[in-house]
Image (cartoon, rainbow, N blue to C red; front, side, top):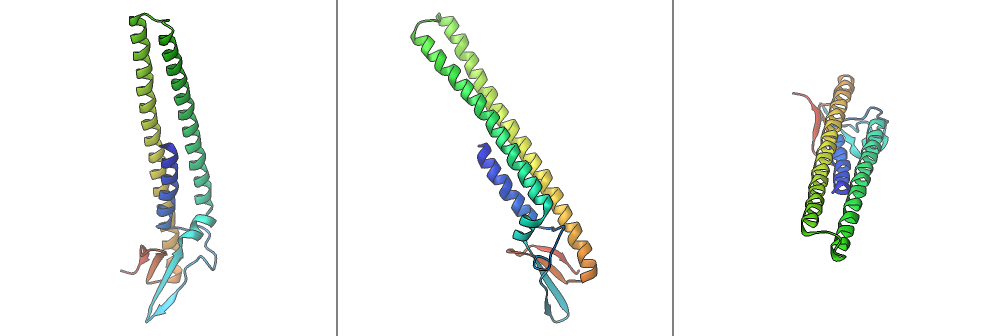
Length: 171
């Protein structure tokens, strides 16, 4: 689940970042303009933002590491719980417990399983919140940069390539 969330996070990051900025925009990435009458239209390459914008690269790495840490922690707890369950099963087969003791140990194992599931959900929600926060910050940075850039360039519309999302347009 965490691995899937990690992939989704990176995809969401890519999609969200595509919706707006590039702090360092080189000639190729910048905005490629075409004249259409008196209105200048430009587009921004999403791939270039993702590959060249330092903010994107740094946070992609941070999210990847956080996802790996979550996955490792959950895997360790899952392995521990499975080992405890296997030991319990073996002890039951060897008649090491009374009926009451076996029920108590089983209830404890079930509680640990529920706690693990709750932890997985909590960590997943925290991770998703971090992704959402990052995406918002990225969108804000991109919007701000494009608006500042367009004050001087005066493009009629700025699109994101490969989509039709408008980053900035004349009213």
